[in-house]
Image 1 (cartoon, rainbow, N blue to C red):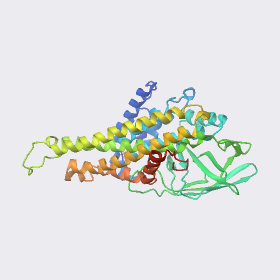
Image 2 (cartoon, one colour):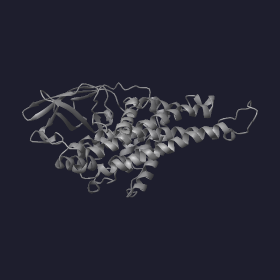
Image 3 (tube, rainbow, N blue to C red):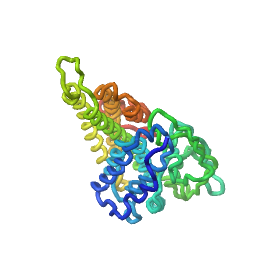
Length: 413
């Protein structure tokens, strides 16, 4: 199966057009990208091919360097805008929304844990060269092992998930120094013999995220490139632990985007194709005049608007601390933000799955045809929402409400 995204045609789409300068202009640029992705999102999902053209589209649009420093050609935007961009892309294609969201988190990884000099070097590199990030950091698997040989760190091991995979220019890896409990993060070039992708991602949804397994064999990193280490010692900050709430809110935003895309696509189908039910005793000429159809869309839209308000507030809160001095963050502020993000994520999973299911009742039996493609939204949201158990998110919120507890930072909180 061939798809319609043509890298050569898209590479100069924005050539000669001034770069966006403010959040609204960047959101408009994201919408332009989303409109392109929406054209054949279902066909590309069915084909399940490595999304090289899609990532090239993100690069040529400038979205890849949205967080990058302006002096190196980046957008210089903040996380509040980034979260909205992720959502816009996910409305059209949940897989590409996830890829972009993970890229932003890994592009920020240096700021989370690295030294000032390392941050400057990484941000100049990826912004100047328009590089895309992936990550081989799955906490549920055994840690990569790290051996120190002649001043170098040598990483070995396997991860069952590695989002970004073959489309990433840079890969974030993490492991434990042999004989210690010291965790080390590093950013390495993806294209090297020691990074071997299993090419085995063939799941129910989010099929274009390149999230299959990866084997790490003798990948070497200089001690000077071990993120946040100076003379072999790491100085922890509360700020280091923002990686989890930051990416959990990435999840919530592309979940919301997927749900919004489902509702918009279903509504268009109902307007154009769904037939009114002729045997109810209160017959209507058009499906849009059916009271239960309007009521159904109204309930779903109301829930998604409420979810968006909660998610946007969480985005403003975490953006403020992500862009503040790293030394300023306290455990209490970090915990309050994490609780709100847990609540936001939990709500959009419940409401998003309801939306992706209920739309079939509102569009009718013919909308279940594979050619219509409404299944893509449920499959995408159902697949990634299994990332970590939803009841634990509600428990975090509940213990905060009952006992005033804030979540202890872990790989998932």
